[in-house]
Image (cartoon, rainbow, N blue to C red):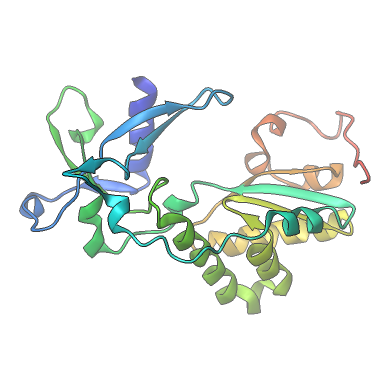
Length: 241
């Protein structure tokens, strides 16, 4: 249960969820989501799932949401482009769906019950999510559109290759691409991170087959398994493909 509380603490500290004000408790239209913890068998960490498919009187939140257009890139196309150049790069958008806020007038459909102040000794009160949820049928289309909007708005400052990377080489929250050499890969990573950061979107967990790329990255943006490595001492060479 401690990990469950830690997860809830994070979403509240990040303003991903907030208490429903007392004068808004009795809303005319509201929906309440059950939530539960799920453990990833490999990562050994908990994820709290808000169940948008849970039904009340035969209806769920997902039944009432429009899925939106399929904006998923072709995985085959991504993999072919990934294999094209010598220097490979992979990364991840942190909590991609949580990176995009829900309009205020729609947040009452994302209510849930939890302990006041995240303290199990206090009363259970009403909260509501301020961001889109993993599990909402509409979230993938909204997040994909949001990322492309960021890329479009930033193309004049951060260059066309960053926009193409975001538009064409993202598969859900995973990003794969390749560059002719380490310097071009480093530049693309840094400019992509800088652009996404302008909208509080974090591109991290980055890994490359090139030692120069990995050495140029701060520890905090590397993939977790590589954060403790000293690339000046550890044998780590690019593998041509």
